[in-house]
Amino acid sequence: MLTSQITLLFLLFLISYASAQTAVVFGGSGAVGSEVLKSVLSDDFFTKVIVVGRPSSSKKINDIVSSTASEEKVTNINLDRVEDILFASTSAGIERADACLIALGVSSPHHSNLQQWLSIEIDLIGTIAEFCNKIKVRSITLLSAVDVENESA
Image (spheres, rainbow, N blue to C red):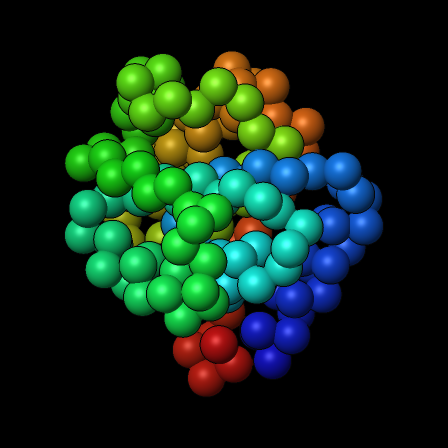
């Protein structure tokens, strides 16, 4: 069910930005983000996909990339702190992108403390939005599964 909903959202996104070619994906290893990443990689719409994540998520992201046979169009950027994207974008060679897809979040917000939730859901997303503005992204899409029951995912 979640996969079909994400696919529908992704198709609506594609229709609204028909000329986009480069996507930046944040959170590509999570429950929502991995489905978003698969959709982005499986479609010829994007010719370049930049995946930003922590080193601990690189194996899962590499597995997703391999499963879609899209290695040639993917650039992986591993940061110990995703918050450092504003500073790392220049050294990583990210100058511009057409779309930014953000699928970050606290998987079980009712099990985390308020400070952790605010740090990820507000502060980190705000930093990513600043980064997207810096590289002149035309479209920012925020996908969330806050409070989705595990059985439906």
